[in-house]
Length: 117
Length: 111
Image (tube, rainbow over all chains, first blue to last red; front, side):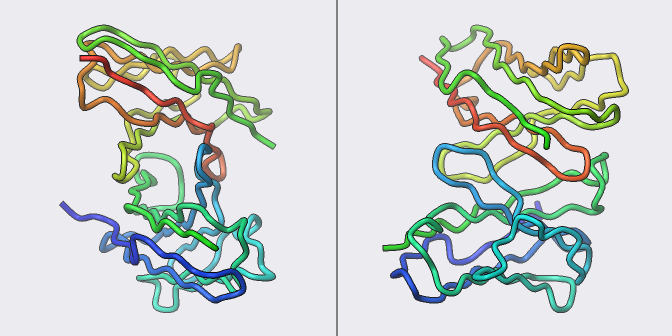
């Protein structure tokens, strides 16, 4: 069964360092999402891509976060510089389409747990 | 902005019994979707059940069913014949343009 792949699974970094996360969506999925999940809370959308274009990045802290999906397939989320408050699980999800109907069911990856010290 | 509230941080149920997880939401939209997601420990989040707001009939997926009360903006999840594998965090989510999640309910299954 096809799955969303993410790496690394765990990352420990010092504050002020740069960190990057990678996501490979399910083949054929045009829509890709990055979420941040702080411990004890539900996921919060950071950015949504439709193919290689950003559809929604209204919750992305653009002074330190960037995301790209250059060829409309895999994606990278970067934080520079990392801050203590960035410690969280970063989840990637993909879907066939960007709506919320049956075509838009989101499949989640295992996540990257980031600890900033 | 839409909000989703899960008022039960943790629930415990005996194996084979029935448990209901609560969720309320706030929206001014008339057309939207509601979801329950399951997040097992150290595993990825998976969709349990979805409900379209325009459908009056409550969604059902095997042992999982919902009680959707649109006027009350309530969307509870009922798990029948609870199994050990049901132990997980359960998140209620509201969707119109994107997904807004609640804080989750930790479900414990007692053997």
